[in-house]
Image 1: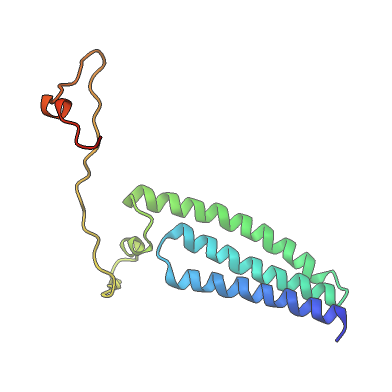
Image 2: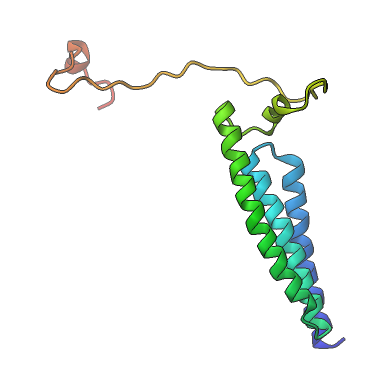
Length: 148
């Protein structure tokens, strides 16, 4: 085999690996940002394959198409960022299941029975004492140091 054909096979293999990793990420994740990054990884796998075929055939068409793909990916990134910010603003989470609340009227919601519902746990936030006020000290903990 010629060196060009071996180089083409290597590029196509790396492009296929990028595409498959992105597809697995899109199908298995629920976080919107991770899904968006996996879609971008799929686009990069396709772009790498196009550049490899273009180089193999000594044609600039594939490389020019990759430039258009990069431009479309930049537009997609802007739209995806706006959607992600809107989703987070409405729900406070980046779970893709929240998009069910944004469906058209009259459409039945899809209920994923395999995923357990998230339990809301009450968060206890640490509090600082106001400026100029000394906190009360527990004399038992001051006299007995259990961790020393």
